[in-house]
Amino acid sequence: MDLLEYQVKEWFGKIGIPVLPSQRIDHPTDLKRLKIGFPIVLKSQVHGAERAKAGGVRFAETTIDAIAAAQNIFTLPIWGELPEVVLAESQYDANQEFYLAVVLDTAVCRPVLLGCKEANIDWESAGEKMHYVVVEQEFSPFYARRLALKMGLQGTLMQSVSSVLQKMYQLFVQKDLDLVEINPLAVNPDGEVMALNGKVRVNERSIKRHPDLVEMAAKIISRHPSTEINGILGDWDGVQMHGKIGILGNGTGSVMATLDLVANAGGNPGVCLNLRHAFLTDTTPTTFSDRLETGLKILAADTSIEVILINFLGSIPQPEELAGIIAKFVQQDKNELKLNIVRSNGSKIGRDNLPTLVVRLAGSELNAAKSYLATLKTHSSALVVVENLDEAVEVAVRLAKPTTKKK
Image 1 (cartoon, rainbow, N blue to C red):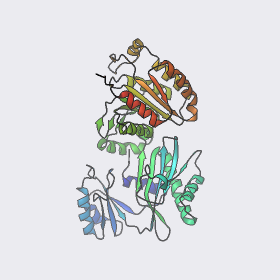
Image 2 (cartoon, one colour):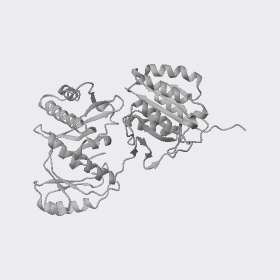
Image 3 (cartoon, rainbow, N blue to C red):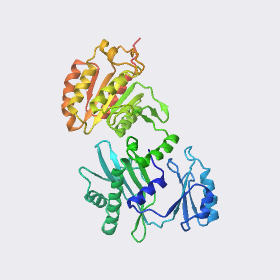
Image 4 (cartoon, helix red, strand yellow):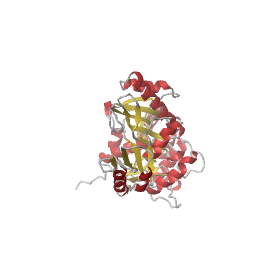
């Protein structure tokens, strides 16, 4: 769940991240009672990207200009969304702009600090331009200073950027967030820093732990329902997927990356499950092993799925149990399969053969499970163990393609 900019700025201000004087505008006539001085910038409060290119950011020197600009913004849909709020904000004279973020990296299962001396950049595709520091232990100011030094900052500017990073991390932890982003963090000629725009992504499973988020979430979700339901990523760009390759992963990022690779390789992705968190329908606490067993049953119960692609990386609780659950699944006979795997309505699945499991495990903690499964695969045609993700995707796509008989 992504917050709107004015909500992000409120959080930034409370935690001590410098933000400009601003005012929420619910109607163009609110600008007649503007409490900040001109010139100002008016920003459409929508979730879609590139609002400036779409005309959702306007500058104004007078009240009359501001009202006219606000009227245009309120009636301008951006990616199909009309703003309910416009943010009026003071203008800022900047001669440098940086990118900063704190993000939960699902690959290493740790928070990561990101920084770049270029603004308006996508952290996922920035490449070598982006500097990063993994928060491997309990957070300390050392991590923030280390990133600032990697960015080539010195003196007072290094201290200012480090201070902002520390507060970003504090907010990240306090609110159970997946992402805190400042893009850009501007620096004026006097060396003062200012968060000109921000983004916050809330972990939807933590909302109930924070009463201040419940009402906010209800409004956002009513307009932008999540595509992740009960841990199942069932929609891709609004299209329900009923493909032949089901995907199991231990993180949203890894699941989505695997899905992309399957689609790019010409495969037909089906239901995808993220086993890192409990399903929303779980009424009692579950372990990762419980969710793996349930996930295999869910995918096997979908008769359109011919291949289950497992991509686990990093740290997994009880890794020694993982191989046993997979082994038990692939060693079922047809009668056990029909008995143990049923649809939600109680009917048998009508499947005579197991989906083939293509398993890719990455991480030293998973070496024992990988070795055991490698010996097991010689006795089961329903199991393929591979070393890397590209190979796993290639094998899964090939197995899911229909075989053609020679005439």
